[in-house]
Image (cartoon, rainbow, N blue to C red; front, side):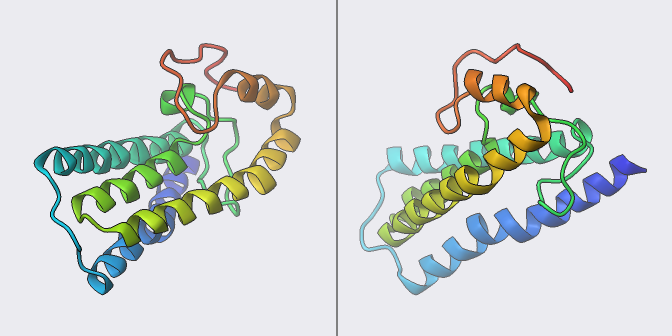
Length: 169
């Protein structure tokens, strides 16, 4: 039953948090400030790739939280175990990286500097949240296991080879 509630909680959180940050807000910005320039085919392709890759990585990360961690990304219902599988073997913050990729991809798709500026603000906000809340919380909860993971896996720029230091708590 814990897995079902973790999946339901993760789905709800996915709709509320990333759905708002990477979906609703950029949509509102684009409608408030229409494109000022036309995007080249190459930038459209890159933007589309970033959005698609971001959505795929985001969905995988949410599933890993529910299935491997038996919890949600929401601080009110955290995982039972430290999630270090899937995309978490390449980067410590795949959800945030995915959300930022989705936002910047939309900036390219819609040729919208306001969405790009919003992406910078969103990334800075997420980075501050990670530094001031998530990292200390994870270190307190998982101790040496998180310390080893944190030293081996970068926070924002994915490593090319997956970390093999562990698969579960």
